[in-house]
Length: 146
Image (cartoon, rainbow, N blue to C red; front, side, top):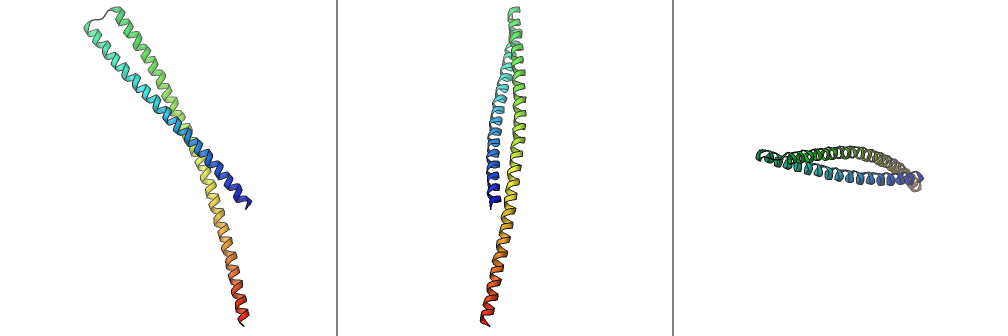
């Protein structure tokens, strides 16, 4: 019986670890979604700003205005590159967290399988004991009636 309680403790510990890994995976997914939204927003802002820049060039723009537009577009490109790196890092974190969660789940399922096998073995032993008792009872009853 001590083996079953130790196995139950391992199952509970593995379940806790799996739940924690699932929680971390959820946090990583939400962080990635946030980073992707920020990237999309920056890219949309850059496209809008570039359209305004082109309209300004078409309508005539001073050299200082042209230089300001160009510098701001460069800063936006730098911000976009940084945000793309953040998205890439967030996606990598998702993959890492998913791997850890899968590992925890495999461990938990392995312990569950061991527990199921142990319960089945115990049930077979109990069935044999019951059958033996019933056989002994039937034998005694038959001997008693003679």
